Length: 306
Ligand code: BEZ
Ligand code: FE
Image (cartoon, rainbow, N blue to C red):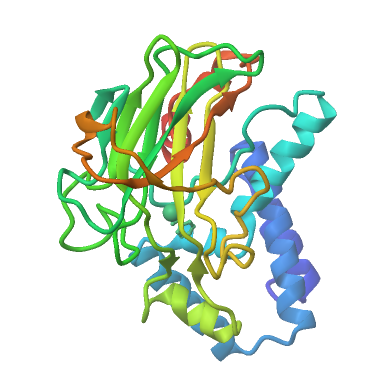
């Protein structure tokens, strides 16, 4: 009985078992394999198309670009939408909206108290300061919150991923003071674009889509008893602000810029001439359990729980 039709093969693939395995992994794999068998049959996928896809997936993994594809195909935003829906249902939709972490976070950035420069003391472009408070949803300042901030360089590259940059360039961790204050000096980054001539670019070309993100700055804010906040702010005026390849622009996260701010009071950031400023408060929800306060970014969470 080694001759099989499609249905018999699918049944075999989905039911083979010599040990219990992981029931959740089994259930998800069964569902995905079933959907893919169906796709191959209904879309009449040819052998060449199938093996081309396998080759593409292999190269995607080799170049470490899966995280670009999940964002570009909407999965990262989907996860956020589902969390927002769950919050809404539970009556706890409050505070600063979450926005995707993206695949370019790197843990271990140098930590400073209250204020810092992200530009390593080497000014690039127009001087920009972002400042404000971390608050809880009762409006109380959050002391000793730890805020990771990261953004792209002047050509849209991120340190650790873009050649020629210093290890933690444009990445810092800021600890708020007793009033929840933070501030940092940097420059307004440009948008991001997926790497050209890459497996990711191949897919988006084939889909007739661009791979551009509007200018943005990332934040990961952690504080005892509060729900970890992963978010980004957008810089107004970007061509792609409503057409982000990662679908991550959100109301309430587009900052306002004040131009020609007087430098008095900003000397400790090396500022002696008028500059651009944005004031923005981050509002964190109360955590319901320890897991929600976990300081780990997405990959650290899953590898720690593996
Ligand atoms: C980014 O945040 O820059 C990013 C997010 C998703 C995919 C690629 C880049
Ligand atoms: Fe980014």
